Length: 527
Image 1: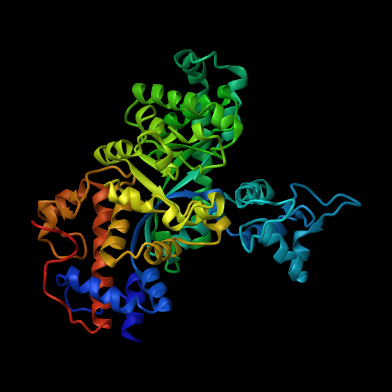
Image 2 (image 1 turned 180 degrees about the vertical axis):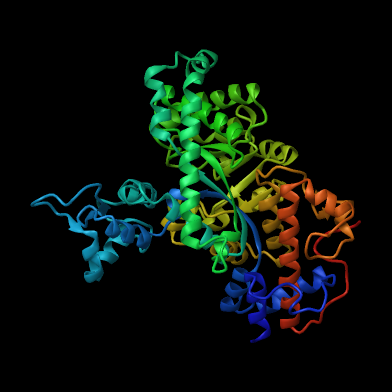
């Protein structure tokens, strides 16, 4: 096994920490950066390095869009479903007599048709046509096309998502899901919202919530049980995905009438209180949709009312997923600001139109001061909005001190993974290893995991005094660091990331021929 292969094996957990090294020694941050610069000159090796690099979290990941089209076609075949090649969609029922339906099981013998279906269900090889003119429209159309195949496969979808995360060496996922969405939204028909009488609507809805919360929890129980069965978790043959920590954001849909949106938000708050697996609430669907644009301010006021009633529930809100020309200029002026100032969002998903907001410098300064993090989805923003490279505000956020982390959005639809996003950031924005490592750390620093952070400062990252002098590796058996980690789920995940980064950096330095190094490491900064 080559020394570089050891890097990959260490990060994958195939070699236990300590097997390649007699004892964990401090790693020089400067040496790690030099090693990365040397090894990363070759684009192929850069991709190998970034795949092996431990990554803290993927915080912006829709489970429905995380699955590759191939899996959905396989499930359609297993379930006896049909597809419509003419319309590029999976059908909910049996093939109609005389229609254009083809049994999904027959696609295995018709590779060209199967390839066309994969293109229709994802962004693979997308080329605009007269009837399919934009990446934005094609992207969002895929969900309705593949939804019938997902109906009975939530656990299989979760298994695929954690398997991809493990392959990217990601420790933690926050997945957006919407259990019981139809029933919850339907509460609006029985308890209509009158103007902005949120308190009145809440009183009417509240008696119906416990049963729906219980049903949602059962849905997630079943999904996770199926995932564990698929991956053989808890057995000697457990797949790597079993080791990925998963939590959920309840995703609400912004394109419904207000009376159907408010129950979703109210329910999301109730679900967060009832089930610790749900760590926050989000709002999704195309932001440029006519209903979403019309009601945007109303939705933010709904969140604001709920946040005032219950400030402990965390929000990560899609905001600013817009580009000039998609909506009138006034539509770009204040969505991110409302999400931050009215709704009280802790994180912003996308935030692409920030430089078109009123007084963007002041807004970014406020976000930096409040530590409102932006979930950056580079490929998604390119294929949906046509925003990339210098036109993307990634550098503007970083220059303003706004915390950012990379995420995938809908990796199955976009045909990417988190490594791809790290590689894109590294090459397009010329990021060095220290910057990439900070992006990895930021994922866990701003995750909605309970507990104190391992870091007492993040610019640069400086570890809390209790753990700053403890060598990288397993959680110490006793002492102040042990006690600190025992009390914080967040800090334990961060400690695990640091241990993996230590092993990765040590072997990367050896591969580059730079020696083990001796300076204080892991980005702890001054004690």
